[in-house]
Amino acid sequence: MRIGAHLSSSGDFVAAAKNAAALSLNCVQHFTRNPRGGRQRELRDEEPHRHRAAREEMDLDPVVMHTPYTVNLASTKPRVVQFARRCVAEDLSLCVALAAPYLVLHPGSHGGQGPERAAKRIIEGLHEVMEAIEPSRRGSMLLLEMMAGQGNEYGSTPKELATILDGLGWHPGVGLCIDTCHSFARGYPLHTADGLDAYLESIEDTIGVDRIHVVHLNDSKQPLNSRRDRHALVGEGEIGLEGIERIVNHPTLRALPFILEVPVDHPSEYGEQARLVRSLRESGSTKTSRAPRD
Ligand SMILES: [Zn+2]
Ligand SMILES: [Zn+2]
View (cartoon, rainbow, N blue to C red):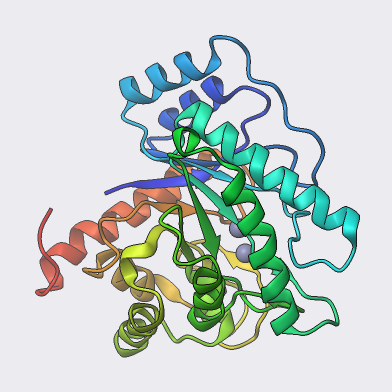
């Protein structure tokens, strides 16, 4: 199984790949730049080549990139929107340069303007970004992350994300990243077998589960439907170990990369969390009769 974590890339993607492998992770996620915004660091000459060689040697795949939190395509402030569009475009180019297949994006926050206008702004922004990419530079997908619906976050339901995708003409370069903590907090009871099935069916009916490319595997500190985005260590939150076990063994999800974004005191804990998740997978494949064996 593919299990990784969100790790700092601290100015060097090659060292970051080695850090991930040292924790026995076989996929990884990094911010493209400082999570609070700022300029993108320029890659060093040999960095993409060395990064690719390191990944191949250590079987680290995929490398997922995440845009900074300050990106808000739905903002009513022109400067914020301008930064957001430039940032998504630049970060997609970075992904292409590094041959990183996915760039995860929080769709945006609508302030007081309401969800319909937010959706329109997000679609306009992404349309501009996607149109500007020459076909030869395509190759990394933009993944819209399903949010917890905290505050004015847009994109916390399959229907809202389907609105964006529909506005983009179901562009093949745009997919989905789901987050177990977010969707649980939004009110999807994916800690139960029926709730998980219903959640995935609602994605299938509106978007298609084949558009899901990455799962953020986080437990939730806050209860179901709290609409509060507070990640917990796997097995120490409201979803619980049994819920996480069902998620990583679900036939629709089990082949996808799982990325941990959990509150650790030290990065070494990500290794322990990954080991815990792997152990669930092994027991899951013997206990869950409908899940095919690896
Ligand atoms: Zn995210
Ligand atoms: Zn979150």
